[in-house]
Length: 392
Ligand code: TGC
Ligand code: FAD
Image (cartoon, rainbow, N blue to C red; front, side):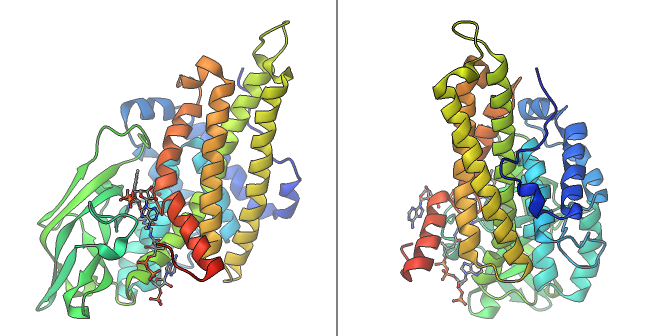
């Protein structure tokens, strides 16, 4: 039944893209179709991250694609977004990996790191030779990271880090962790630290039993008096704001990625509805209620595409504000989850089988709705921007 994916473009969105942007999307799409789609259902069943794809992704320039130098691909933000869209059309887990590597590890090293730190880490990370993770969330500190307990104290030429981080993507496969901690030396202000994961006292343990993002590694990190050289402080990080600036990069990519997951669900449901017959030997696509669901999906996917393009162009001009990114993260992940639920419904019983990608996307999107700021936290960020009143 499966017909090759041709993209979703109801309103000639593609006419607003450059040849290069379309080419980056085509390359990523081909990579996912050739390399991820044939194995993803088994990875999801086994709870296995397809690590063998990391190096080829590095060769294609998928890591840190908007950074300048250090072997990065120097793309614009729409190209970056289109990569994330195509990765997540495959699986949110692979997009998650790329979000963390690019937006949450390479970006802070690039933006807040010393020249030595950039030279040491960025070229290897761009190639996929070195992997990173980002430790902000703690067992008792999720939506409100300012309440974190992890501490860094200065002892001579070293910092000593202690604390627990929770729900950390790529935690146990990372070579380096970007750890956010309150630094005694800086009056308890939050600072970023680069912690090599083979340091004594650093332990990463995987979280098992996930119903969502099964093809992604999620870990807890424990740090007991982990000693790092003083030069591992990210020198230009300053306060929680620096950590939140990293989130802007990753949230932006998630907003594009969610559209990829929505497209996968829409495309599958459309094909199924044209093929599956019920009542009078007619395809179920001939029923008005089924059409209504498909129209809802194409309508919302189309709106999301145009919002993203505007946010991407603003980002390229350095005019994007955090609340713009919150608006698209919030809207697009919600929209994708609704598409997944409607698509699952259209497939009837087949909607729960992993012969089709829909239930996997639906389960993944439940995490995507929560991480990088929950749906409701993004509501409050936009609410604060338009009213001038924080309601956290
Ligand atoms: P607040 O006082 O509002 O802000 C502190 C300072 O930061 C500034 N700021 C931002 N700057 C840049 N970008 C942003 N997005 C910013 N948001 C706030 C703010 O202007 C202020 O600056 P200044 O100069 O006045 O000091 O701080 P708050 O503690 O009240 O926090 C507000 C809130 C709720 C918005 C924030 O805490 C938040 O975003 N919470 C959500 C936490 C979150 O998103 N965690 C994500 C963890 S990482 C993750 O989930 C990775 S998943 C990866 C994957 O697998 O894909
Ligand atoms: P809580 O903050 O406890 O929120 C629970 C509920 O309360 C939510 O519905 C929330 O919206 C609501 N709520 C909280 N405060 C308010 C308020 N003021 N007003 C209204 N409602 C409120 N973190 C990292 O640092 N690095 C990672 O790599 C990472 N990867 C992740 C991967 C996965 C698969 C998952 C699931 C999470 C990951 N996270 C990561 C953690 C993620 O960022 C947090 O789960 C998220 O920020 C929410 O925190 P919490 O789970 O503690 O929920």
